[in-house]
Length: 242
Image 1 (cartoon, one colour):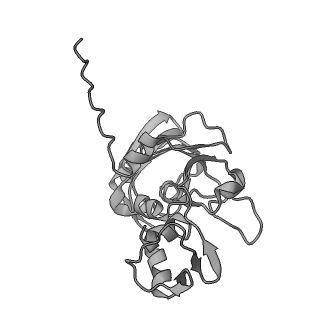
Image 2 (image 1 turned 180 degrees about the vertical axis):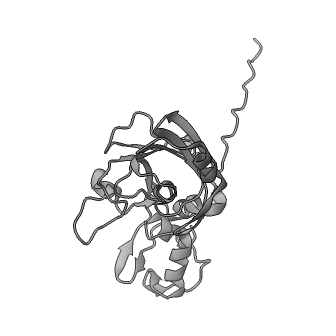
Image 3 (image 1 turned 90 degrees about the vertical axis):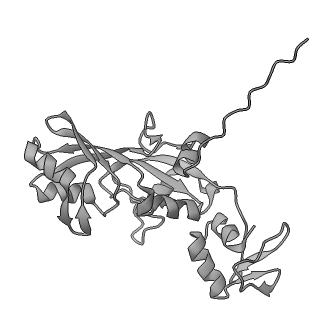
């Protein structure tokens, strides 16, 4: 396994971030400094970053129902509740893919696979993210058009892929962008307050029956779809003639 992939699987960040650790000469294998990104890690090798031994771990991919009031961060200097308080500690160092603000709730993905996280959040990946949004008063028709046409907010030009009415004050919204607090800021710019915001889907991964604070492992189908892979068709077995 190449050194950057090994470090990423140990939860030290994306492969690019792990390459920086190598280039900064912070990595040793069996006591020898590593400077080449092509270096391979063999079974039994002792890998250190600084003075700390690191080990490759099995990849973890989790779907979590984040409740309102929890921070989408790995730690908080004010000791407030974070999403990592909701998952077992034996998973080790894991981090969130994207985020939800403190007041929002719903689906968030956690992993220790830095390369997967980086690819999934890259704008070119264009993963649909679906939300249920409750606002303080009914949405006017021309404002719905403005939301899908797009306009500038703090953070850049923002638009919604689709806005579907569920009830006079409840809407299904689909995004492909990841601007901070995008849905709240877009509605606020048009004169609406978001009363409740719940993410219900990320690509093929559905919130479904996950209750607040519950989590589950992603299925192989969900993971392959997110990674842009399609399962190979099963080979047909021919019945042997008697």
